[in-house]
Length: 95
Image (cartoon, rainbow, N blue to C red; front, side, top):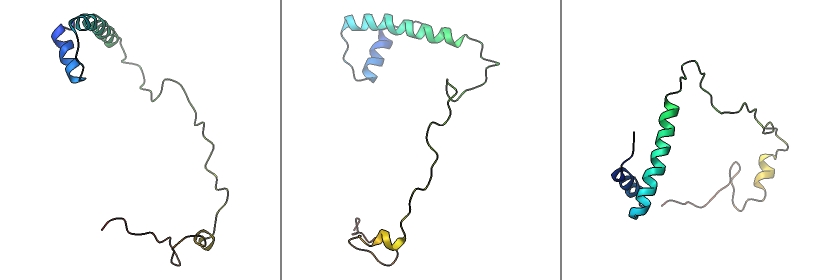
């Protein structure tokens, strides 16, 4: 599928680009080659290829979640500007 200059102008308008005639000619050629490469990829037989989540086999590189220290409820609330016996109290934000 070859791209026409009108296709490139329409794509430029969608991207909010103001293209000069020289840019339209250049992009028509470049985008046409890109579309040709995508068409070439579409011809590859992928019938027996298993779908992959990622191109590389990666393991989780993050450290496991481990609880290091914990405050009691009273310790957590002792420096709060406003609290009741169970929760931090904050000013109302809505209405």
